[in-house]
Length: 272
Image (cartoon, rainbow, N blue to C red; front, side, top):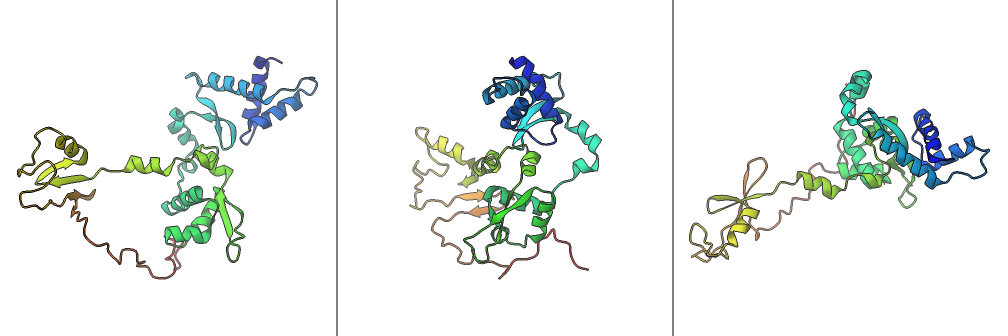
């Protein structure tokens, strides 16, 4: 059978399915539908047909497209029609996870499989309520038990619903933490001798021939008195800090002010 004759059948399968279909599942379904054929369709032929379908619906003429999401192929509306679809679904479409639930979900996504105790050790608060809500929404599931820990506690992992919800196919498709932090990183501003300059600008200026600081210091930063000035850093909140490289570390910085145990989950309902 020619590829052009296969494509409409694949489109019908993807459209009618109530769950994402993998390429292997589509291959099996099409071969079952055309059992009279002596030569069975191969996975490569089905994949070639799917590539043709993707190219077809990539046109601006269609408000929907075929995408691999949630572990399989689906028909999904394009992002340009998000606001229009929101009007149809109303409040259900606008429901959001709380910050505590999102925090718990992020920990499970990046640390899975993970136990409740490990989640609470990272968050620093009880996570019973958040985990229960995520289980109810089927964004996480119980994947087994940790046989190496005392009591063999339950371990949690993200579900197929989670992948479908966020439009990914596996946990490997999640953005890398380095990429996330790189987008939010703010370069510090150093103030030297009353002049505000960024680190990059200061470095470029110091490489110019005959460079001297406003106070007549030499390019290597030595002042006439023999003492190097301490850099001043402006935080995001506008606070001015003096960075002393010789200052001892705060011995109390690592102490837990909450004491033993974990405080209650802020999302948990309060007793009257």
